[in-house]
Length: 196
Ligand SMILES: C[S@@+](CC[C@H](N)C(=O)[O-])C[C@H]1O[C@@H](n2cnc3c(N)ncnc32)[C@H](O)[C@@H]1O
Image (cartoon, rainbow, N blue to C red):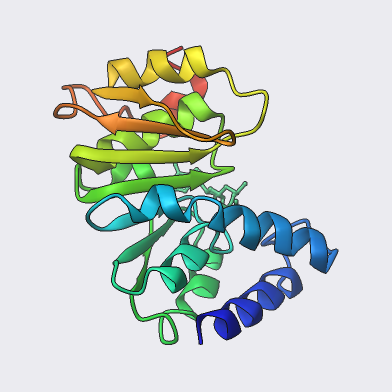
């Protein structure tokens, strides 16, 4: 069942204008589906509800939700049109819910895990994701080979996050304390004035 719905979701993402620039089905499968599932073990071993920040067409949140049916997965997305697309999958994948909004404007510390793929530069993604996670929880970022891990660590340190060892292609930040006063900063500020 999960495989079937994921195939239909993948085809729909590629066929729907504005969700991905990938037109080649094999490239889309690799980037949107297989890359998402590379994080399954990292996310699956964490406890509590999951939020996919900047879910776009639904990756990595939809592949993770279909593979972890016992976990609640929130797809948080700033663009209304993309949320309308994401809503279509909530009947078939009942552990998914969709929230239209920005990371900087969500209730604090409501999740056990925040994941993000291609959301923003990793230091900015770290600043947006850490306040969403409760103490003891984790942020799992999909990152490219050029990621500046020192910058991510510097940002994490400002937001009660600590870098953990993890496989290549990821950055994992443990939330080791409450979100410090002053965070999240106002919408747009993290991108305009990164902390590191
Ligand atoms: C490049 S897309 C990546 C989408 C998907 N995660 C993927 O890997 O294909 C980034 C998405 O993040 C959303 N986004 C950007 N800033 C955001 C914010 N502050 N809060 C929530 N969503 C945001 C954008 O609307 C966009 O859909």
